Length: 464
Image 1: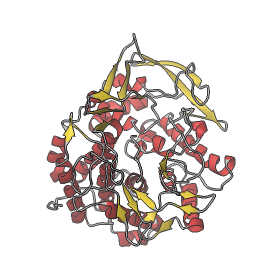
Image 2: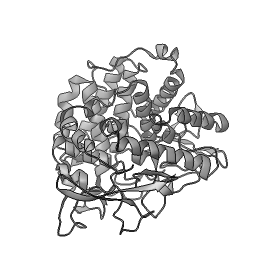
Image 3: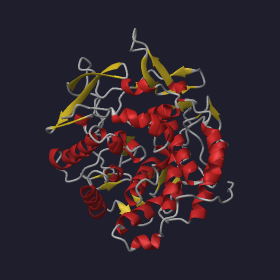
Image 4: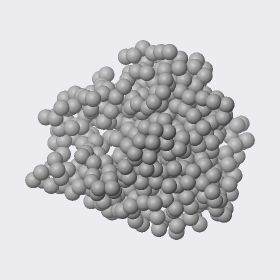
């Protein structure tokens, strides 16, 4: 993902299908009451991030007496707001009519955003919707960029909104009709697979019509959401999936020499590789972070559709994160994923041994709560215990805005910020736990069923 640099008109209410299920008051009486309370507080932070125009700021600064929104937003942030609002309506945290009104307001704002080649630019002013040409606070120039993965998360949010609010479907379908993922795709060239890898580019600069010098090659990273969307709508060929790297081939430099063998599926020969960490085999991500591996299955049911491949590696990935924190570092806490640096700034954090890059992500300095929420489907008791410890020992949680973005457990320093992306992951994870399938419905039909599910069904990571 193109990671962040730190630093109003309403619409009519619409009929909502599938948003209503009980009430927040009823939830308080259930055994899941702590999870509902966490959801309610986290959603309040998303409300505070949102401008009157209906767009979320990237970051909320909570260091002062009143929260302060950042002056930038991205397609990912907007997608997070859309699915978070659908989840709030579905869990009874907001009324169904109010949820629909908020979703319609955000869709209206998205309709007004300038875009190019069918896709949205990477940075906008959340108050006005204007493309950012200079960075808030510093005045540094911002080049107009179309990010592949950030557009994928906005499209994800729009698909969820269209499913939840039927009256908006026509408008959203018109927005999505222009999103042709082949724009970012470099077709496979057997004569030169380096230049023609059959993968998606990182993005495209519109000021000089140039592309990034890299492709999203690693399969177990968050850009696979863009791949799934393109596979599902037919703008990407099915064999694109098999051209993504489970690991880099053994002859290429990476964190460890992978084990595995060549497979041929749908006419594509590729290396079905895996790493071994603490005696368990798994498919690594690029940097060993939680959100790379586990953001996508919040929406696409990989574990269900591929239980012996994706289901296995997801569970082992979480176990590796837990053991790295509890056993290798001995801190008593775990959960590494890109997040705010508690002392200021933003940094990619991960477990080096389960990431391919030798340019390691940081592995000390910040534990982020969103990593534990992503682990809920695979290690719920340990995730909840970790979150309670972060809250109880460091004050990382407050009843107004939920968990702060990160904690330095060595010094006790707690971040002053919450981030739209990370809060969006927290809310999606809680929604999936409290009302399974609420946010997954748009990805269990159409091209996802007919095109993506068969691919996942044929996956075999040779994990043993």
